[in-house]
Length: 124
Ligand code: HEC
Image (cartoon, rainbow, N blue to C red; front, side, top):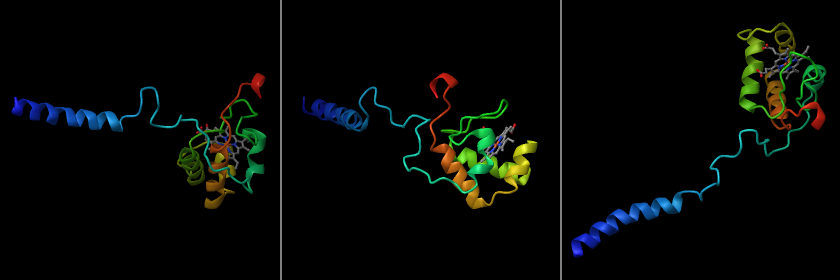
């Protein structure tokens, strides 16, 4: 009996340990992908170069222009750097990103990532 009890305990312990570290059912481990950055971003100095097309809050104002609000910050910075070095080609963005310094790119990426995501016109 004793060896059996020891075996049962040995098997039971890891399960108990797992049960303690697992989150309760239904509680997600990661925040939702579109969660805005917790730190409110200051308005970037160069935001004025972007608003005519992407809007101040990242909801695009021009047909054919992507919404930027709530987009992943690292992706926004990567895209701007790619337009700037010419590895990603789109005439308007290649021209505009030439006017940006690395600090501007960082500030603009942080700003747009912290804005609410796209809302259809009826909800704006
Ligand atoms: C004249 C209109 C216009 C202006 C002004 C403009 N953009 Fe764009 N932007 C576009 C268009 C059009 C695209 C899509 C280009 C493509 O096909 O890659 C784009 C793409 C982007 C993307 C990539 C989005 C994605 O989902 O891949 C980023 C980031 C971006 N713009 C940031 C900016 C920022 C920051 C500014 C201001 C410094 C700015 N844009 C100014 C028109 C504009």
